Amino acid sequence: AVAGRRGEPVRVLSGRVEGDPGNATAQLVAGWISARCGCPVEVVPSPRNNGPRGIDSVVLQLDQDEEVRLQDDRKGGAVIDQPFRPESVVALADRSMGELIGEELRRLDPDEPFSEALEAVSGLSGLSDRPAFREHVWYDPMRPEQSPAAAELELNSPDELPEAPGTAAAPAPTVPDTPGDTDEIAESGEHDSPADDSDEQPVVQSAGAPSAKKAGRR
Image (cartoon, rainbow, N blue to C red; front, side, top):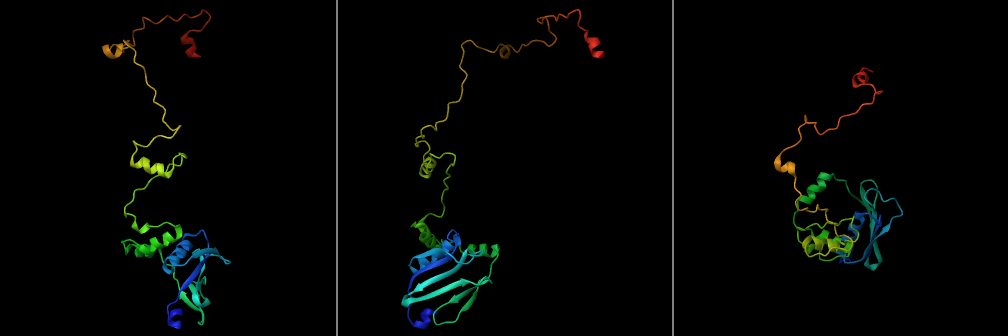
């Protein structure tokens, strides 16, 4: 609308997203605007409640000292405020999870705008050039001395990775071999008969002790 009123292209100098700085949606919106317009966009706390979306308003600073603001009206829409125009409302209907997933599945090719927004937010480059299939490297939280780089190296070449000091596993206990020590029962298969009690010593009962039968009657 601003470009149509001027009759010439409009240049965005900067922008800001007012909302929750820790919200992922607010950060992605700021990254997307920064990638599309080629200008810095920051996320600042909002003076109002951020609401469920995490974003209260988006402000764009244009050339010729003009400003465009989009603010959540908390009624399922956004109010657009721009120079020399009355306020207008754009409907922003909430969609179900199925509708959102269906929209994502309509395009299975690489999402360059999304990768550019991530690059602007994270400061990393070359995200769109990464392979489609990547191998996840798990970092063991119980090994604080293991860095993520060491975990990736261990996954790629486990035999070449030196063990960190103090992390070597203790050797398993072994039973020393004794010459001539054999199991006679295992070799001959003989064992003592349960009825053979010739080697047992007789039980000596004192004269004052009650017999087994009398003890059983009690």
